[in-house]
Structures are given as C-alpha cells and as structure tokens.
Image 1 (cartoon, each protein chain N blue to C red):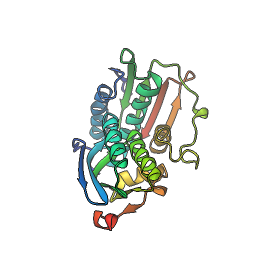
Image 2: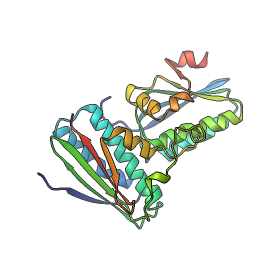
Image 3: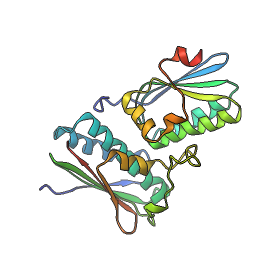
Image 4: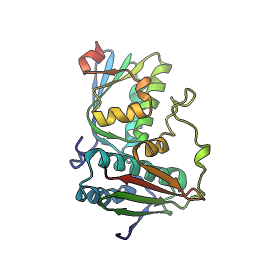
Length: 116
Length: 134
C-alpha cells in the first residue's frame, strides 16, 4: 500500500473460450464506479462460465466499486456462472473482509488457478 | 490549536474529489501512517459519495461543504450536504444475509470501521469523522 503514488484506474479485458479475465489497476474511486459497473455488468451478461477479476494491481476500492463487483456477481449467478477474485492487495482484502464480501467471492492466489 | 480549513465543492462525483489531496497532504505532513492515510481516504470517499448521491441526490446545483483540521494528534473532518438528512439507526446492516448481495449500503459501515469516531448532526446532513495519529 502506497497512497502517495496515485495511478489512474484501468480495466483490461482478456476474453477466453470459457472465462474472461478482467485486470483492474489503480484506484477504484467514486468517480470510476459507474464505469466499472457498466463494464462488469456487461461482461457478466456474456456467455462465460466465470468472470475472473484480477485485483493484484488495484490499490484502492470504495463501496461503490464493491457495488459493481456485487452487480456482476448477481448477474453471473442468474446465468449459473460466477465471479471470482485474484490476489487482492492487503488493503483491498481488508475492505473485502470488513464488508464480509470475502464470504461471497472466492479468492484465488493467481489467474492460472482461477481459470483452471 | 489550529483552525479548520474550509472547502466548498460542486455536488458531482468527480469534482468533489478535489477536496481529498489537501487533506491527505496534511496527514502525510504530520507523519500519519500509510494505513491511517488509506483509512481517511476511504472514509472521505464514502462520506463524499453519500453527500453527492443520497444527501444532494446528484443535484449539481447544490454544494458540499468540507471542514478539516489535521494536527499531530488527530484529523477531524466534517462534510455537510444540502439534503434533508437521515437517521443512522434506519440504515440496514449490509453484512446481514438479506443484504449481503445488495450493491449499496456499505459506505457508513466502512466509515465507522476505518475511523476512530463518526457522528452526525441532529439533522443528519453533516458527518464529523475523527482519525487519531497512532
């Protein structure tokens, strides 16, 4: 965690045959939440069996960002698919644990494990 | 004891974040830990989002007023919107089974978890948050 080094929020999408890997980078702040929600909701509606959110490069998430993750989870579940998280940084993991969202999102150590 | 600094911002999720850098810079100047800076940043984001989304209902003609005072002992931040206010007791627990999959409602919980003290004025349109430098 290094709050002095602010990086812009980034979303990189890599579509595979069965899974989509979404690599989130930087800070998911309140002004980025609508974008994140739009992207994840759309991907969750596509015919993947799993949406993999790689959080290893994301240093911050607010509750509106968490809301975007939950929307993706709910949309995926309706299709019998799921959303999983990869390698959240300690500060982000603590936010997930504080809100108990770590109970509904499986967390993997790396992307390879998540798509296996 | 230093006086409060005062900022006024538009009720917009992008514009409102302009209040963050001067507050976080003061925390660093007073050598708050990285964890404390993260906590204040998170609580600030949550309080500002609540002011924009729930207090002022994203009405860009309304304003949000921020007061802050940071010293070596503690940071005190007040955020006030122009909305009708709310009652803390009427906000549902976002971690309960019936709410855990709802996309909203975690901001207050995070503010309370990451700051040392949170309190609202009687009307419920101003929150005061305190983070100790420890």
